[in-house]
Amino acid sequence: MQRGSNELQRRWFDVNRTRGFSLVELLIALMLSSLLMTAVMVSLDSGFRAYRKSAEEVSTNVQGRIIIERLQALIRSGTDFGPLPASPSDQVIQTTSLDIKMPEGDWITVAWDANAAQLTWTDTSGTLPLLEGVTQELDAGGTMQPFRLNYSDGRWLMNATVDLVVEPELTAGLDLEGDSTPPLRFTGSARPRIAAWEGR
Image (tube, rainbow, N blue to C red):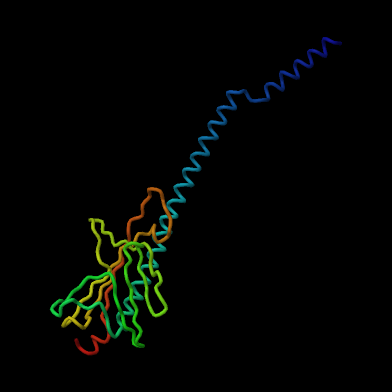
């Protein structure tokens, strides 16, 4: 009777022992799980970086186009402009700021702050940031002025060109840790209506 009971217990332990995993099998399973999780994390990270990069570009693109269109509308409706050329013989100046006198008589100044890398708006109520990330840094090296003003007789603005170089990462305030987004360039040109009406 005791012998039969021992035989039964031995068989029961043998069956249960074969149902478990050995240490080698557990290590292999852990290694495969780690590889799978690593691959998933790398894939998620790549997707997240691509999303952030795309979001930066789209956001900056929309902001830049809106500001260019707004500046063009201001130039068209302005009645007087500055800064003026240093000499009446100078017809074209490149500058960091543009002064616009509105029909109501108020002056608006749009200026590039190189230290803060932003475009600012100044009116009677004060100065506000208009667009961030404006570096004006060209791929070929060096920087360019954001405003090109064409004058007639050294006094009357005939045409104004706005040329902005914007870093999307600075605009969105994000750092992609090496996945640099190329700078975007926004250009617009406008002629004051008063110059067209008066036939200058």
